[in-house]
Image (cartoon, rainbow, N blue to C red):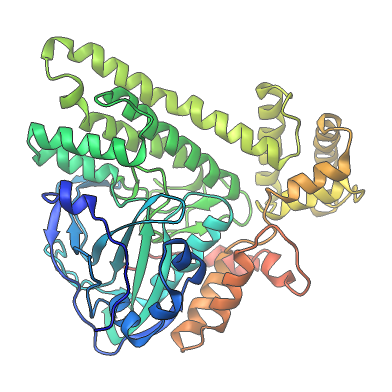
Length: 492
């Protein structure tokens, strides 16, 4: 089969071969291209036109293995809704290998929905069209918002129907690109099953690949680096109202990228208790709980490094305390990132103290909760207040006295140049978001073979800060009737 030079250089297969199973993707009957992410392909040094060819689609579907690839199903464990599962692993995904992109960054290339593996646990190893396109749409939206995320290089229809609880549905395979697929759950499996030498090799691989600023053998420093990466990430989620929906330890990367877009959603009205996932009946992964869940997951990661930190039991209590301190520091680090982001969202000067910034932000969010104000649109409206529309928000609320009191306090702290401040706010507060009703509308059309709404939505979301004529419906909140009844599903 005519090939392309993919440029694979597979350090995971060379150094951590024991963390998974060598297994090829399972071919599908009639692959056809849904979409190729041209700009991402070029970033990876790949030819988008070849990827869209018959030969290219065969490789993206798993019907052919690219030259230089070493397909692996990765093994990992994980705490799922707080309960430990000692062996999970890729039940429907194949890591093809790694390429070094145009910026010199090493990226995993893998297929999802590409057939059964030794970790399938009774599953069919396939993915449905809807969840594949959801991951494409939401991950592209996150990338355009400047939030670290795995991305979708391509999606291919399989020509096969797969059976799910709600009946047969079209199958699809996506090609995922990630800084790596190493998770807290990977480290949990390593701690449980690996030899001392393998534990050391894994920690050093994570350090070299994702946190090379940490000195060799500095395991406390590695905890610190992963804590920092996740504190920054979760603050970004919170600033845009993103709800991951299933923050199990096997869905938390050691790189600090967002991964596994299952029952994810974005807030409409601001609400810390918002839950959209059908399986999160207790609200464990509700919007406002995400920072504390991240910290809980990071504590599980720190535990995996204890055998390396304290091989001598006499030093164990001191080192456990040192590791615990680094996990506790998540709160301070998260709050620092969160305040910096909200300072930008509100156009507040850098010189304003954290205490004053926190008071203004917390009071605003309390009003947004009480008044059911839209999490995204409110910040765009505040910029119009600076441009002279004094009542842009006041006319939307029931308690206008409370609002105007907050607004005057806010205005008193905004810099003297309202026009340039408003412009700066618009550069960090998106006008357009992957709103849940727009995503569902695109997926429903795609299920009938119409990809135009998906392409149109992607086009809007790839430039989320620039208001363009004719796109009002993409900026408008969902109808209240939609949001009241909306739930998301894992798509497995």
